[in-house]
Length: 359
Image 1: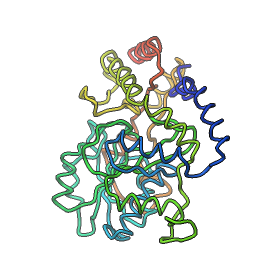
Image 2 (image 1 turned 90 degrees about the vertical axis):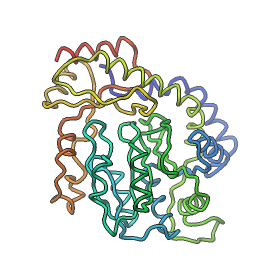
Image 3 (image 1 turned 180 degrees about the vertical axis):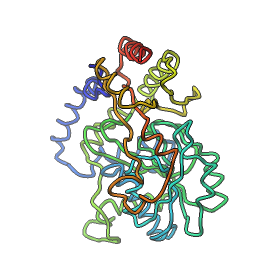
Image 4 (image 1 turned 60 degrees about the vertical axis):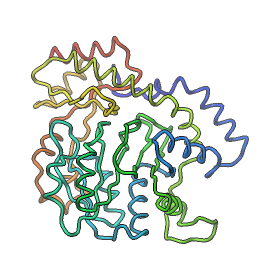
């Protein structure tokens, strides 16, 4: 069976270093917000070309805390509307709602699956104060056009970069990351971060993430307990220097898929050949998804569906069930994610291609 994502094999080269890091962690006896977190924050901020990084518990918390901090700073108010792609993973929308804000869905560009800038302006109202832009599947959203709209309407822009580690960011200056184990830069458990150039925002998020406190036992806000784990920070530091080369390997896998898969029943993803895609996922589409997925499984190829149900159709989102987003709904009915990682062998890639071309 060719696994959809073999996390154990991805992490195997780091196992000895992980063990050393664990031993060092145990010897120091400092378990929360220690030197590893501080060092990772500095190193990841530098990697992203930003001034500040605040480690948090996970990617969802990164979104919530960024918006909560903006509310505290007066940039937003509870009840403000936030533009968000209709076909994103539900966490993007949960983050907006838990921050006390209102999501407004916009259809994607069917070619790239990212939010369609041409459809944003029609959804802007007097209550619209910001946008949460998602770099879905690892492809950079069209930030030039999005930033123009943001400037025109004075909208705050936050980027959900949970699937976009290593992208050449050139848009807003606030990005929320997840380091869930399956991400391009994955921890060995839950972890997340917010990266920004705004010093006040960074300080506010850092305080919010630690019970609303900058000084122990003195609380400025009704905060949260969402801190990057010291051990996970150490593990992430070991993997970060390899992220760029890991992404290059993913692009090489994608290039083979794109050049060698030839089947008119399958729609391949758009890729312009640049570094604007880190291929967190390689997502194809087909009219008969269940049939294709069953065929691949019978031939020893594991696949996933990202995502089977559109957010506005989820049971948890009943207040949005009356809405209709035909492009989003079609995408969610047809997408299939192929095996994609830096450790796929040439033979495995060739086998996936052969089986797909035989479908």
